[in-house]
Length: 192
Image (cartoon, rainbow, N blue to C red):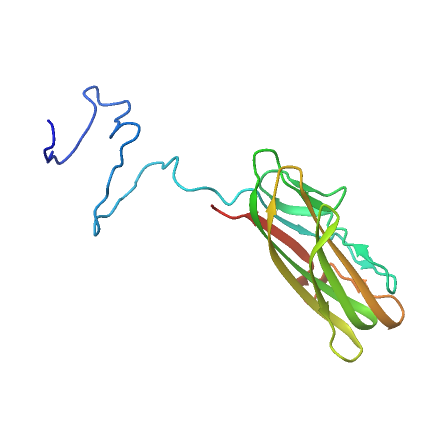
């Protein structure tokens, strides 16, 4: 039928199984405004996936030396869709075939020591890409720092978190958990 309208209730293959193809290469299948596509089966080839994704934490507290930039030792990945978080080197490494834009977020809790400020840095391949200074303008023994960014990452690129502190006495500690609030880093690939 050329240039006509096909009106049917159900379309199936003549054998009752197999593939039904609508259109051919170079054509556009148009769904008019107000129409709904209802899917009860498996949808493939639509959009993308938010993978890889990860959630990494500390297994114990980490002591910081005054004024020294220190990599946070995220050594436990409780969620890691593609086994891409390297707990030995405390960093997320983009797997092959997974280049794209990534959302990265971290929360750090410090406890003990007389901390005047904590500077937290997200680094890509060892180079600072974003930082935040938590400066409460007075000495505190408990600080929470939150930092986030979106990065364009290629395969084998890696993301790490560093922190440095200025302390009036003692050494600050990045705590695995303070009052139920974990220190963690998470990230996931954004759908294009």
